[in-house]
Image (cartoon, rainbow, N blue to C red):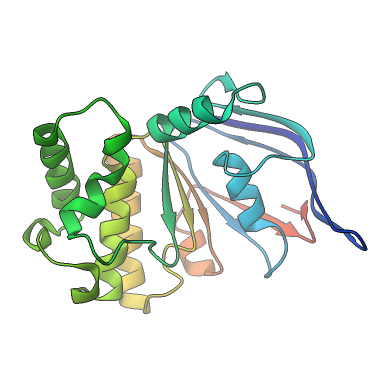
Length: 221
């Protein structure tokens, strides 16, 4: 489902060059739940952003869902991301001025869907994360765990093949973190969604199928 070959990412300024990723090659199978671990600054989020086509490597090749992405223009990349990928962030990235249902509908605004279809799909996604009774609430009226559930619903509303999660339990206590992990595990197990998760939590990582470790931009496990 995801194939990265010899990925290198270098950030350059006028005075310094920083190697964020060094010759990382990684295959993620369809239906796999993979976790990525490593110390802060080791390149985890950079790698996830490259998988999500939010950043481009300095060297190497990327293939997502059997499609080579290097030659896609910005519009094609945006359409491909919208259809194929769902994103979950540590800090939720919800819009506080929009109700929960409207936040979840957002990815569908970029597709050829009617308002009725968007509402139906968003309601279904919220039911999957146990928030069907919060559709008219605003994010500021929710707990951190509930806001992360809304973020998951937004990520899955378009039925993506792949979910990329950057520290999805990082801002939550252990009990709520376990609830969020259970939702992700069920999505993976019951719907076959491929999930790649960056985490600092060993306990969460060991609930996934496979663990990859990074250190100073290189894969060490």
